[in-house]
Length: 287
Image 1 (tube, rainbow, N blue to C red):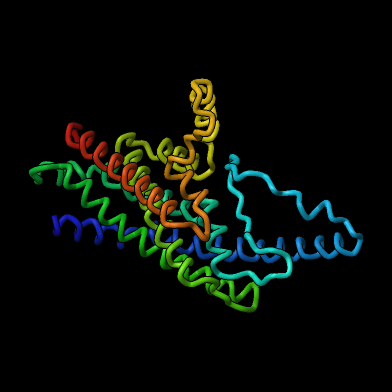
Image 2 (image 1 turned 45 degrees about the vertical axis):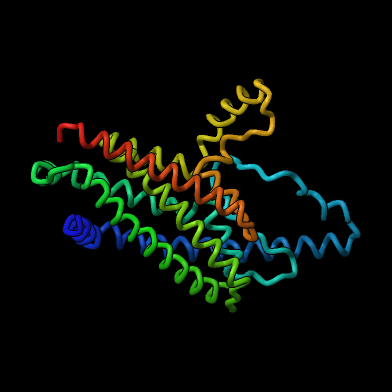
């Protein structure tokens, strides 16, 4: 198993797509950070105009319950007059699944590369249990997820300093707690995408489904299920709150132990189920 993991890591670090994804991620983070600066300036100017005209109604407009809309929206939680912290920017990008999009694109490319090239046929017959190839790939993707998250934080810190002229971390304890939990949730989403790529075997379909996951397209499907469940009497149940993408979007900056334990359980269940299903399919498939 250790040799398999070494082989997958070697293959991963010698894949050009890995470095292309990281370069594009760095450029995209710079873009979103600069856009956040523009948005904050606009909000502050609008807030000053409201104060000067005595318009108090505009202050309490967005007191609605949290909900997830279709699409991707990167919005920093910074209030007018406050300085944007690194925590604010990281929260905006992670909860919007903006960073996850890059993770999933590489996962599809990496997970299906050996299947498309025929390399898996040569090595598949040399192992006793082919499911070990999936576990090895999952281990390599764990390294990729952690390393990419670390690189994202570095990119974000640098871009924060460039665009805003200062770098404030925010609440350090909550920051690392939040980032750690989001890393676990992102890894579970990576495992789900790996399952899609291996089971479907078609890059275009797998990539499309991965993008749909980050764009909350399945909200339409979840809403239909919710209506059925609500008609049975469970009016407070929302299926998206119990999915990996839902947990990524709804995880709060200052969440308590219960919220984080539920998120961890969700990631563990979906990640383990996706890996197990991939192992079963790959074991029975004629490669």
